[in-house]
Structure formats: structure tokens, C-alpha cells
Amino acid sequence: MNKFMKIAFEEAKKGIWAGHGGPFGSVIVKDGKIVSKGHNHVVVNNDPTCHGEIDAIRKACKKLKTFDLSGCEIYTTGFPCPMCFCAILWANIDKVYYGCNTTDTETIGFRDKAFEESIAKKKKSICQELDREECLKLYQDYNNIENKTNY
Image (cartoon, rainbow, N blue to C red; front, side, top):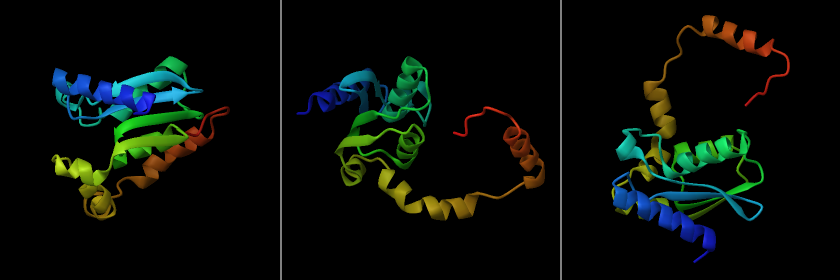
């Protein structure tokens, strides 16, 4: 087993046995060194966004004092769900190594595959534009700030 995947695996086991959530552990690595580890905390935190990848990303950003994880790789026990995959993209993580795929995850009762298939349809059914003109003023205010980071 790859040494970083083994650590992600152990992180997932730690979370499972502590009752924190599903079997999802992650490790973020930069230049061959571990930056952070994370595991699913959905159940213990009552937080549907606290997946292993998100936990590891938050810890890595805090440790490195940046929101840009360019040059990093993530090792995770399961293929990232759509939320986690987007977080990985927003963080600029260069490479994703995963253990189990979405079909494997589905067999243990998780809905990742269903989310992947329904995102576009759901966007149309539950999203509605509201007060756009007022909100555009915020965008204009932000756009007028010098030395900002568009992230």
C-alpha cells in the first residue's frame, strides 16, 4: 500500500471507530511531506460538509497560511464527492489519488453517484435568481477594491 494512502486509510479507521462518520480519510502532501490529515466528521459535528477531504483542506490551509494549495496532492480513501472535488479544484490541489470509486461508495449506502448524476437537474429545480440588481452592487464594490484576490 502506498505510504500516504496508508495514512489516509488509518485516518479513516480512526474516524470510523470514534463514531465521527463514514470511512473517508484524506492526507494532503506537498514536496513529499504530509501537510495535513483529515477524516469524516459529519456525524460528530452534525455538519454535512465536514468530509475527510474538506477537513484535510481546512487544516492544510491553516497550517500553510494560504487558501492556495498549488503544489499539493491529496490522497483519499474514496473518490471525492462533487462537493469535495470542487473544494479540491478551488484549493488548486494538483493531483488526487483515491482508493474506492463511486460505485464502491454506493454499495455501502452513500449517495455520491446519485449526486453526480443529478446536480444539473437539481440546479434547475431548486435555484431561482432573486434581487440580482442589488447583489450586483456588491460585485461592483468588490471589483473596485485594489489589490484583491479573486478566488
